[in-house]
Image (cartoon, rainbow, N blue to C red; front, side, top):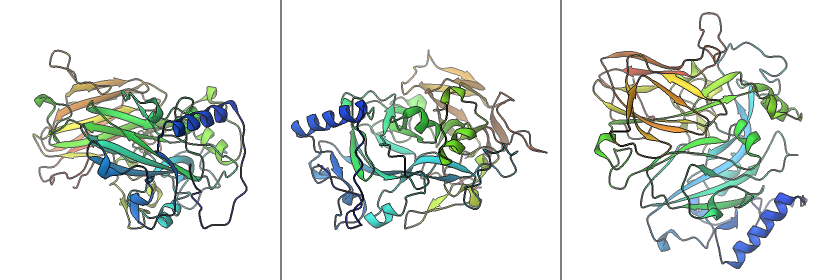
Length: 430
């Protein structure tokens, strides 16, 4: 059914791990073969470069029933950076195993769309948090090819991975990404998920294999669906129209768990005690830094500080006076979070990927999100100035001399009057 990602490389000893989960997955794969399902394939050494070298031969975009949007993601481990100067937590933070400029061990998804096989393999050990923003439109098919590159720091961990689209009303369990009833991707393999979104809105995605550990370690991202024929609306309703668009994913880290995974120690996740709180994989003041960019080889070239090389998504919001700004807010941590935007009323037009009609919409400067929830918020940019958006809980910041907000969920809206038009979500210039 599949071939090795390392085709052409020295043979590796085969790992045979028998468990109830692996037995069930093997049964599902067998059933899938019997049904003629062709989405599962190895990372074949194809002569074509880019994503077509990743998609199994049985899946042909030209034969799809709808237009196809293709994305390729790789899964691996790596190191990221928290804000400089945060108080140390001996022995957990900063991690002494980390490379220069970095301090925290993570697992993560990595955008490898358009890369050839050699470039994809070169991303091993370069995990990204948060995961790449994925978007599509009602009426399209979204094909996401997930490649499991394995772990560099912990090669003894032979976990499979999945892409589970949290909150997605999917009629095909085969592509749901819950390994007990779906398919997981072993090391050295890939799998192409096929989604047919019918409902616009803001969703999230994460790995659902050993889901508590993998979510905690950073395998989380935002995915959203646009309504057909309305690129500048959150839903198929005129009152959700916008001029600019920003996605903010809320998560948090218990840094001791990240140290444990790097140092081959067992974590008791029932003792989960977060000590840094993130927006798009960054904690304040890094949330204000520009976005990172990707070079031709797929390696991230940070637009800001070296310690943010693998945290490319900015959380800063930039607009002109009077702009309608859509904020796609999602919480994929384990704690409830309350954010406030003093002086900037937020109109909630969507909740958990469902449009709220005018009678259901609320307008307030504060929003509360439980774990696994999303909100679509529309604001009208006020006069030129800077407006903070932050977590109201003072205990959810680490603090450093001169900056009580460091290490927490805080960003800002900058209204300039000179901001150029956006060509992609979260894009901004000052």
